[in-house]
Image 1: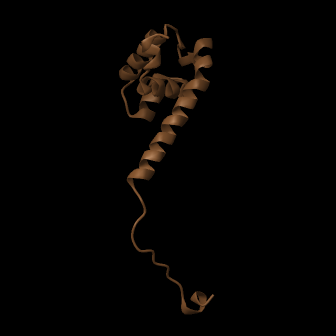
Image 2: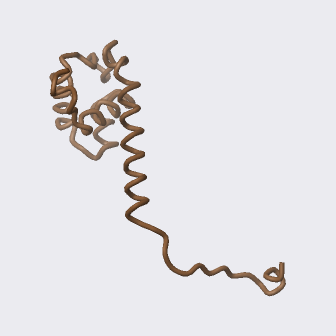
Image 3: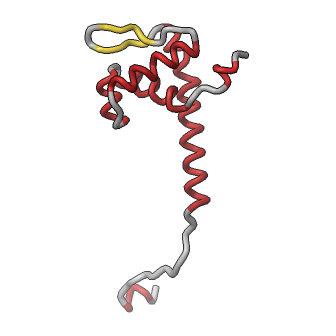
Length: 111
């Protein structure tokens, strides 16, 4: 397998997913807090690494090609895995600690 394919940058895959979901570079840029030219470069970089065209450029945005649609399930699995890694790491970084206080009236606290 080509080394560039085994070391795909998550940022490129993430850009691909957001552009596919939104259908445009400008909408994807707003969602990611990035610039439209940056996302355009990331999409071109991913297409070059894969040797495939992932989007058809249209007057009103971008549409996935057949190759792009074929990559979506794997990219979505990668996104789910990254989310799971982030949750696991967050869980290990911040543990619950400290006292717990529960307030109730005397009549409720009897039960």
